[in-house]
View 1 (tube, rainbow, N blue to C red):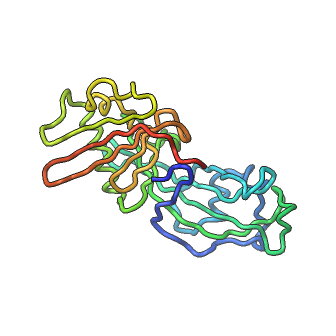
View 2: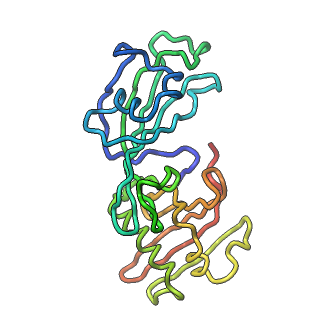
View 3: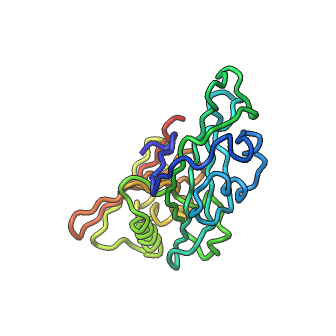
Length: 241
């Protein structure tokens, strides 16, 4: 799982919905000052969910360049008693035809290149789903469906309430950097993981980032063989950006 460049686990793709010729030009300046519902009304399809939050992405190349993308986040809702869900919309841009790549700025007119969506899930920890910030949701990627991601989070959360692991479960812990994080029993390490800081759920692997994106993180891998399950905890350095 590469964490430096986040791949989008696509739920759907839509055709380009907006262009610079409609209403008014799309520019970096507008994207950075408009609120989430305003940007969503302009860029997303009519059947998009109620958008309440926005994150403007990194610049195209240089610091003075306009943003290459934005992420728009739908209102969170309850999935189960323990898990919240929301949908993230990703809008990618490209400068208008003929724009001088050496003179790009926040005033450069942008065209929508692609609109896609992905599912996100997060542990509520007893909080109201609508109050959870964006960084409390994990992106669902790869072959893992949203329903499977919810099941994984609930299962791991349930294990954390146990005093000892079930007979059918084996837990291991590995840390080449800061080996002290694996002190004690591997199961005890598992029960102390801040699952509410899960960042990505991808196939049989989830990334738990205690200190936020770009920092050392737990790669939690789950293997199943018949009735037996194995959880491998690996303390890792994230891939470079």
